[in-house]
Image 1 (spheres, rainbow, N blue to C red):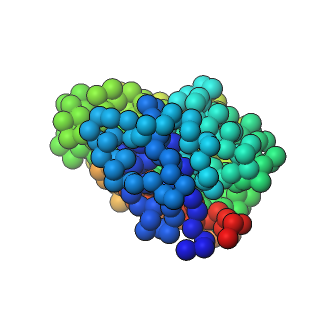
Image 2: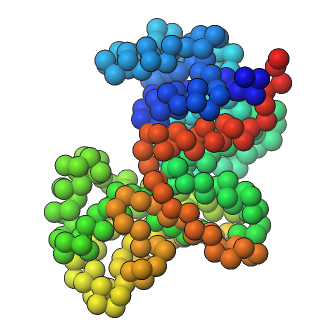
Length: 322
């Protein structure tokens, strides 16, 4: 296929693995994949099942150094290493290196666009390559492409339930009248919550997504330090009961505008758009001309997030090679 892109994938966690597995379905070829310990590189397309099998067996995905990815003959770098805060390294340098080589970059890693947005856009401005990051907000839900379609200037605010773990906990607390600690333990048993759930339950993950949205709306200016964030640890079953008597419930809601980002437990109508249950996410985009747009779906997961990555790859201009 002449329109397919050659992908170099950095990060072989759930998202990176899924991008590698699904790339062919979207008409693209994987020429490199790397994890922190090694890389598999092949200009004719790597043996994806073989590389992932090695990874699953506890070995490096390949025998080359991880940095060999940048020497590969690729069109698009997919950056799917774990999100880091502050200087957003090494994700930021990975993205910069690819853009400086005039390659496209698609991020699943939230760090660079949440923490160093203006710098990243400046590097992109000097590059023949383009930067896309749909997968950083809301998993499979097309949030950023929707904002792009209606234009950021026509969007006044974006609010949503953007963390599945926190939402699962609040949903269960409300349904069963159980306390936070009890439901958290249950969520950990089910694999819905991490052993260290801080990132999710303290609102950091939702805030990062809010910051990315605010950066898109305002063309930069925000990092995590600018967000006003409250998590869900202190939500009591009694608060959920009181809300229910009033036809409402409590959700961890992130709101992004050009003025800033706020994340915290909010009262929402029990039958309203924001009262999604379980691990589902929902995003509400307030627009000038099209009213309020709602998009809900799976906000996390390997194949779900990989779908957003590959949709971004498909939005990039076709490679100029024959």
